[in-house]
Amino acid sequence: MDRSKRGKPRVQDEEGVKDGDNREDDSRRDKRPKPVGPATTSLDKAMSEGVISPDPDTPSRTPRE
Image 1: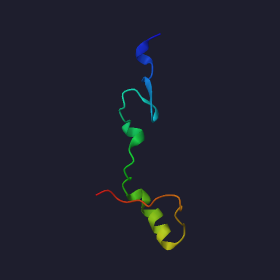
Image 2 (image 1 turned 180 degrees about the vertical axis):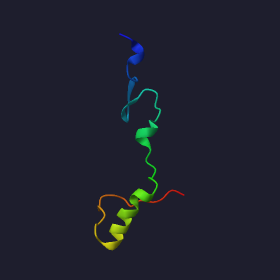
Image 3 (image 1 turned 120 degrees about the horizontal axis):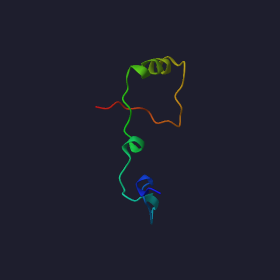
Image 4 (image 1 turned 90 degrees about the horizontal axis):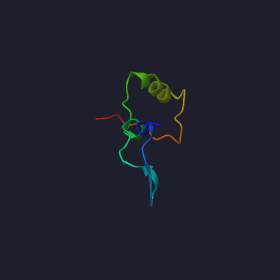
């Protein structure tokens, strides 16, 4: 079996199981707020007119500066 195709080694420490190299996967761990753009304009308008209401469990969006 080709060892280069195996996944990253896992290590166990006091916080639990983590990736062996401790690098963060940017595509999965990017928690920055998403930019507010034209795709959300109609949602913002509908919420301001009271047509739809925001989910109380979802934090409000903040645009990037």
